[in-house]
Image (tube, rainbow, N blue to C red; front, side, top):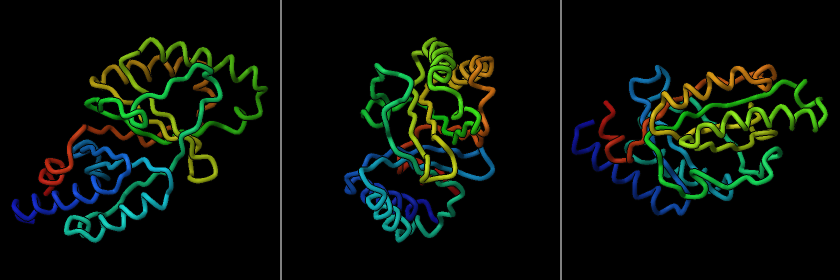
Length: 201
């Protein structure tokens, strides 16, 4: 696609999303994975609202070039383990950080068979470690019954080394023994729609 055509197509995509009324963020994965070049993050009240936007995107010039490699679906819910939880990040409308690291997360069935008190104790340790990294914003959403994983996690951070430090610390907590799956980990760089699309070949 010629540069001018790419810019016009990018503006078309931007207009569709901005006029949709749903929450949206865009990121580049260019050169960071071999299975994806960009990530679109949508949040809406219903799945139908998201489907309507996706349908319109596929009908654009740019949409003809999209080959989806990963799609995840989840819902926001109050945490079972943090009583004083505050809504942060994307849903609250906080300023976007430079990076987001997104991944599906599933715990073992053994985890859910533990008494609630034991799970709370284990999670308290996990939460205490996470609170050592106030510069990282965690978006936890729930996929039970509507997708293949239990949760979708999205960690917003300016320096990805901070996230790496957090994960290394969390590996040493009890809850890590109950992790069934936490891949793929998708590192994304914040990029607005027009520069994102024009950066693609």
